[in-house]
Amino acid sequence: MGWRWFHQWGSPRWFYERARRWQLVCGWLALILLTLGSLWGLGFAPVDYQQGNSYRIIYLHVPVAFLAQALYAAMAVCAIVLFVWKMKLADVAMQSIAVAGFAFTALSLISGAVWGKPTWGTYWVWDARLTSMLILAFLYLGAIGLRAAFQDPDQAGKACGILILVGVVNLPIIKYSVEWWNTLHQPASLKLTEKPTMPASMWIPLLINILGYYIAAAYLVLGSMRATVLERERRAIWVRELVNGA
Amino acid sequence: MSIEKRMLVRELKLIAARPGDIFKPMWFTLLVISMVPLALAPDSQLLAEIGSAMIWVATLLALLLNTEHLFQSDFSDGVLEQWLFLDRPLAWLVGVKLIAHWLFNVLPLILITPVAGLMLSVSTEVLLALFITLLVATPALTCFSGLGAALTLGSSRSGILGVLVMMPLFVPVVILAAGVLIRATDGSDTLPLLALLGAFSVIAATLVPVAVSAAIRLNIGGSN
Image: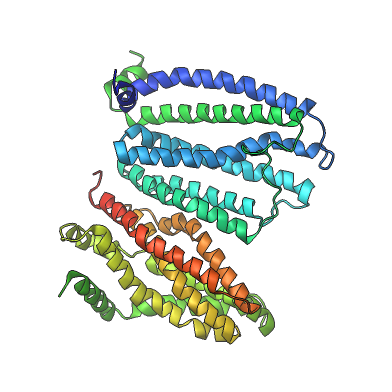
């Protein structure tokens, strides 16, 4: 056995076939969790005494904002794996996560704007968390744009890796500097270290939705990774056989 | 003569060969500054209020314009490849190049800020704070935009991508600098923020050359 579990990841074909099953599991799990969490949150959770029903966008906004940040960290881990073990699959993952991460960041900015209108009376304020989210979106865009500028995927992967690692070192500095600069946003809805300030009937569906969105993100990233593997390995025999239906 | 000294002399000779290149970014800064009162209003009180921030942004843009092609000519005529064969770490040579760039191309930009300040009727104290802030902050900005330039070296269709990719990383520098200017305006102590800004510059100057050298290597070696 030994290191075999690790070296398997070097084989695109092994990944492509396994990921199909994982994707299926993730897809169904995400569907069940998101249906449960969203129905509970939107239909049955109690009304907020201050914000009324408008707070219910929390069941989209918070999970999506969590993911926007977590995916950047995941991308940085992939960059480290790429540089340390030269694993090409890590580069594929970086490419897929960058797109998903940008999508989730954009979604969190948009859902935040929609929530901001009834609560703060405006779609956009230059508040610390909104600003650092906007900067995060630009960082994701940078990773996507830099990759598009190169023709050789290996070169593009390494350039993106450098950019992402420099970005991940800077992210906390950006976050704290922006926070120091201006803060208006309500404090974080859920913290790992503290008891939630909401009643259980509000935060349990939120937790289910957060889990659901994480698994949904895994589903999306796996699907995109499988497509990218096929594209990059298009000259390999197993891909030709697969495509030609041999 | 040591390699470092020769590199500096070479940079000076290159500038002497085309002295116009130094003036273009300064020219650009002054043009941007002249647009501000035209776009806003020739009201000297209003201008004094936003003047220092406008000069900061204009200098930042000029620096980006200036640094975008930092390694391009050395890359196309093979100088960067020769660097790989020297008995110095690549990151060290990159550091020397960045220092030379800061001395000969960025410093002139800072030196004209008093003129820009006069144009926007910024008060002397704020102008002094602005001057010091730029001196302390530009090493970090130079390093990061140099990294942007190095990352996009090998790609022919990158355009201003190097700038776009690096700009989000300028956020802490801009925020701290703005803090210094605000404090200078109301007469409170600017030293703590200047120290933070200086720390950021020192860390950037230490670590970014390593990233730049990795970026140069990947663009020279192709897929290696």
